[in-house]
Image (cartoon, rainbow, N blue to C red; front, side):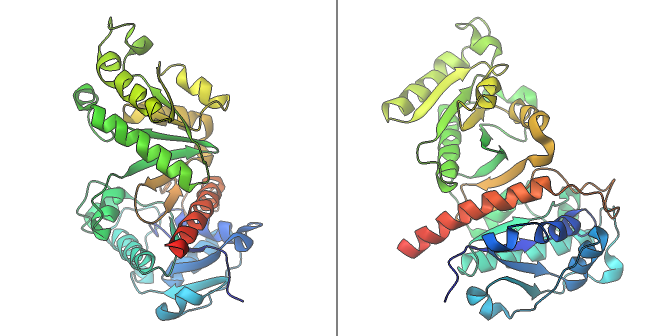
Length: 338
């Protein structure tokens, strides 16, 4: 009987960091193998390195690329991206970035072909990716370029049942106000709503954070709330969307903590990131939202300070896996119905 579970592709991330160890811990955790069929993509010695760092067993059952679509359980697609003596623990290297990109490319190829239903990647190191030739601002834009995807997409951050997205991202703070537009706010709301629906929320509840202190205080501290945010929110409500705000950013996350909303749309990077990381740094997940394939990763980095020391906390990786399973299950069902 053919498996009905989603098939998840997993890549190790930067081999110099904690990614391989985290994946070894994930594969030995309760319930993981019951939740999905898994394809490990990458060099055998990198996966074995992670298992040795974690002090845990890992069986690598090789599978041919053309047989992945029918595979069940945990299988391994062998790759040759980095020599064992090129792996330098806790160091930024071009070789580590090359390994990361080649494994990512292969996972994206498999997803595009329908052989896997979603991708989980261990933490990347942006400096290593850039040294290896990544021709994009970050891995999310690289993925969109690789897939030829031109629709709206962006990074979302998830903590337990709370999701955040943002109107502006990696720009200087002095540039934020000039980049807050009605179109940008609409797209951020839509991205949050779409991703929540993929994760199983039938009617997402979305709160929009204000840009200015006290939500502008009726224009005293700025007019972005009056001129941009309020009209967009009213238009969403007119379309029967559960969207509220603009809420002062120093109180909107109190609503989130109380479970009154499923997502908060913020105006700039740190407005949401500080709150999410304070609430649960070791459980945070990053979602590559809006793309045609579900992709998640733990929200933390490669943690070179503890790499290779059997100290990596797998909490965020497990949360990324669990969310990906929900999204990939929806993705698989939608493909089957198409």
